[in-house]
Length: 108
Image (cartoon, rainbow, N blue to C red):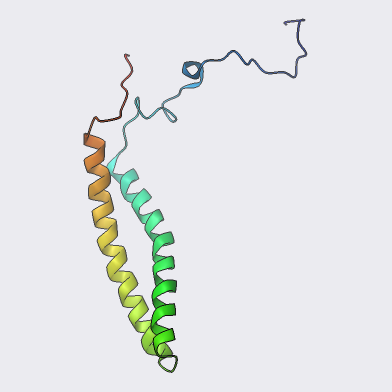
């Protein structure tokens, strides 16, 4: 045990390379299609809720007496928007995985 410093202090001389693992180093990891799809779906859930709220707010404000109609329109817009954006986000994500720009590769 090093007697020059208290045991509760941490080693501050660590380099970033000392703490790199496969999980936190994108240059050494590979992202599978399933992961890209799950990321797209999780983001789309959040974004779609926002789309629904915005659409419903706009449509119901335009005609406050047609709440059911505003609800139907909001649901349709959200479903179409969500489906289209999941497909295009996944394609976009997979395309960028193939582009080497900005990536660093470590020697093994």
